[in-house]
Image 1 (cartoon, rainbow, N blue to C red):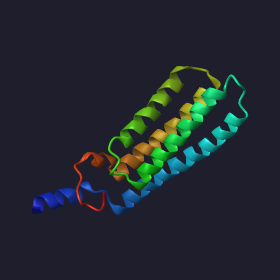
Image 2: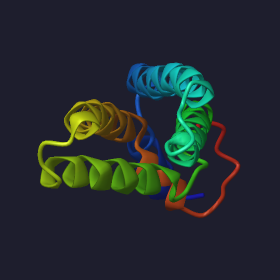
Image 3: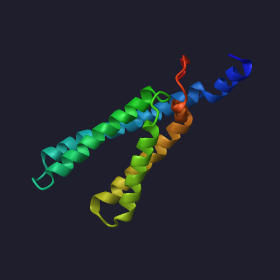
Length: 142
């Protein structure tokens, strides 16, 4: 490896503090979504027959997103595409919630998802999540 390559790799890696803060934010997003999952389970248990499927679908989505956030917290630069899929998915929910108007659950959900977008976008920058797209190396910081 040449000196130029080594210094470029060093510059690309996040600082230890930024990495820890970014991972912490992803972990907080995972925990918060896990709480939403548990609340969703309770809502599903108590749901009327006409809401049962939609509540079950929503609770499964909470579980999936909690797992994705946990994956990002543990392996922020080994999850190519996961950051982007999560950000696009949550942003789409924010836009949809804002566009559908005065639906009781939409506004609160859009605000919560907007918060998640901000937290995950910050974590993405701090952890330099885009580095997941680079070719595999033996770099232990990935």
